[in-house]
Amino acid sequence: MNIHILRSKAEIDRAVADLFIEQVKANPNSVLGLATGSTPLGVYALLAKDHKENHTDYHNVTTVNLDEYIGLPDGHPESYKEFMKRNLFNHINVDFNRVHIPSIQGTYEESCKAYNDLLNQFVPDIQLLGIGANGHIGFNEPGTKADSKTHTVLLAEKTRLDNARFFNHIDEVPTHAITMGIQNILDAKRIVLIATGASKADAIYKMITGEITESLPASFLQKHSNVDIFLDKEAAKLLLKK
Ligand SMILES: N[C@@H]1[C@@H](O)[C@H](O)[C@@H](COP(=O)(O)O)O[C@@H]1O
Picture 1 (cartoon, rainbow, N blue to C red):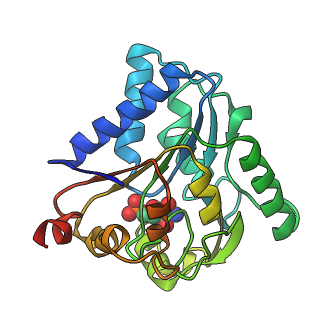
Picture 2 (cartoon, rainbow, N blue to C red; picture 1 turned 90 degrees about the horizontal axis):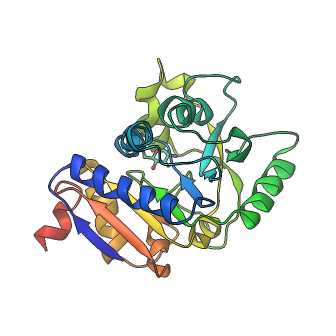
């Protein structure tokens, strides 16, 4: 793992946005693996700004998102589909036919299989990740197996509580989601994970220095040969202390 501890979130956003812009410029047919949550917002704002000013071309880019809530009505502002439109897709010239976000169409089994088939076809050249305070990646909660493919999950209470800030009330936070599995994430050619703030410090410390274990899904990233981890000092504080 290449670990980069930068001085501010702004520096991290710039560095990671530049990696994505370079990727798209080097290969206009790139497959970008995208994430949601607060963490990628700064990167997406910079990609939008760059597109506006420098016209980086996304027309032939394919995107695959990590995950989506189950049970929110179509068009709900906190669905990850709407999140992605609002924060990125509406601001770049992406072709919506090439945008992919897991969703439930038919049975859970059919939906997972369909997304999995898609991921076999579109392997991310670069996959952006955040991390949950309990070490989840995508919505792969503690207990998820290394060889997992796209699957539905019961969200951990900690995850629902952490994500409740986006909803009016905790009861509105979905209980289930559909997510790429750990194996799908590890299939990406390159992985870039961002973590900022003290609430992520424990998960980051265990992810980097701990054993590879299902109880901290992000630790599976140790198995991948091309991972960049971008941290601010707060998220890195336990690494810096030892
Ligand atoms: N499914 C997403 C994850 O992909 C994300 O990494 C995590 C952290 O969110 P945040 O970036 O808001 O801390 O939240 C959600 O649970």
